[in-house]
Image 1: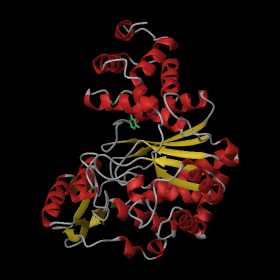
Image 2 (image 1 turned 90 degrees about the horizontal axis):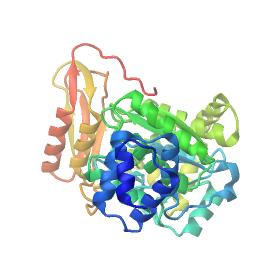
Image 3 (image 1 turned 90 degrees about the vertical axis):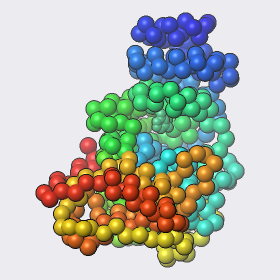
Image 4 (image 1 turned 60 degrees about the horizontal axis):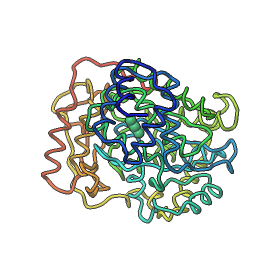
Length: 429
Ligand code: URA
């Protein structure tokens, strides 16, 4: 078999055989196929697409390119969630304790952020003492005992995806449905959970810019997951504006704690209830309505917050910082952005606000950058909110005046004001 022929077949719009797809994934992972040939195939896939069978085979081969985690000891209770990424997305910090307090088993490996703000692991590292690197045995023992453990990527999960993603990133081949689907699902399937909920983001801060594209991606991911024996559900949700009010690592932990203490409602609460209820209904095999009631109850009665403390303590974190979240801040300078006139927030560009948060030091430009875990932006107002002259619209935290200036400039370019009340954006499509 020759890579040349595989590229040619896809370029002519033919369906690749399972053998051709396996040949590409195995040999590219092993370093036997040059980047220029792999890039040519990825571009042909972008242009001509893949059938469901091809996408499933690609996902399976990528999943089997490295380690897979065996969660069979948790039976039907193993759960996982994945978000296709967005600004202010701290849902894992809330969903993990909610769902594990109801008997779910979440053994989760999460990523670090590259881009606007940190990933889940970076956020958790803002809790003093929290260990994100743990041996595989201890990882599963913690899940066994406490129902949840969240650590950084370890082992060699889907190495084919790492190599393919690195090429896609520099060859304008990121936003093709079969490639996104196989990239996300190969990692999720290798991570072993029986029940998976996907949060597919759509809007200015997301890969998918239209609801149709997001729905198509969601359907493909469900179909691939189910054909490989997992229960998968997906929500398509709005990423035209940031999720919740906090963007930045410790700021997002504080907001998650507020939700779990029952003190914060709004979009972040709603989306976490929805995602959690879907997971609970899957692993308990009960209706969505029954599951939703249970989810709301464990937030209202403090069970989920206590579970968060139990989880954080089991990974070495200082839980006194959760009881008193003022301990989760440093000596950052603070600048309030104040409204100059009475009006409404007309629109917020999620991506622009994410970039502004990155400029505070909350995000990485390169893998080697060290994050400022206490920097970021708190949105005191969001799209559709009425503002009076003198109201604080947002609060920026950064270590220097220069960073505050850069973040403020980008933030102001990313919002528009309106004299008319705009409609509140829809959260879940
Ligand atoms: N997230 C991934 O892991 N892969 C993609 O291709 C896109 C988003």
